[in-house]
Length: 112
Length: 141
Ligand SMILES: Nc1ncnc2c1ncn2[C@@H]1O[C@H](COP(=O)(O)OP(=O)(O)OP(=O)(O)O)[C@@H](O)[C@H]1O
Ligand SMILES: [Mg+2]
Figure 1: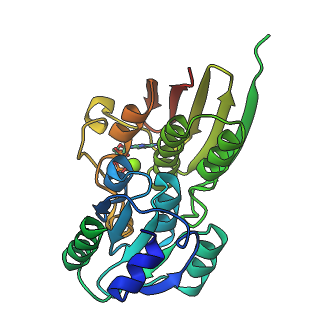
Figure 2: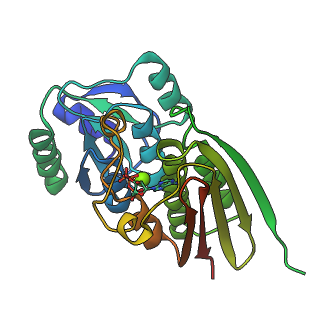
């Protein structure tokens, strides 16, 4: 399952597609404190966070997660969106809280 | 003679938006050289944590990375305020990060422990009021 498949199935907004149509998702990581995310998030994870700033993009790139889901209605400003495009990072958005989002992703991954 | 690639970056102490550029560049260079993804990840994370620390806790500094066929050596040198108690700073959860930095997602006090975890050798030399130099080595083989 790709991040874009996830977005379509769960009605998440695709803020930036990046590599989201080709990467395979494996596992979920939730967290907002970046050093902790960096030490635990695995490559190809779906990373769910409320943290929406330039460091979010850096951490997504360094950990090589498959996509970032910004929960609780968080979004990136225009200059950060441009940066996400340039770095080809898949960014999805939802108004739902982190837990509900993770649960929905989990159910979907379990079925697939 | 050892075949060594040296990369050098100046880290701006003011600019949060550019923090991470050095680690991203090193990550790309290592990938291109065919270094294993696991090693690339460790180097990139260790370097990013160190780079962010130089922005948050010091006033920027200089990063030097040397890549040999055997290992990646990183040196992060700053002329910031220094670390009074290195043992304490190394503890998980210890942080003096100010509130405005916490609101950006930093300040968990996990940066230095992460750097230690990601590197095979790590040394911190610091003098209060003079600066801090962190050296880390990640083995390739
Ligand atoms: N280059 C440095 N110059 C001065 N003090 C430093 C430096 N690096 C780290 N420190 C001190 O060591 C403490 C612990 O650093 P560490 O990276 O583990 O946590 P943090 O930066 O506060 O939070 P996190 O890395 O989890 O976002 C810092 O809060 C700071 O007091
Ligand atoms: Mg830190």
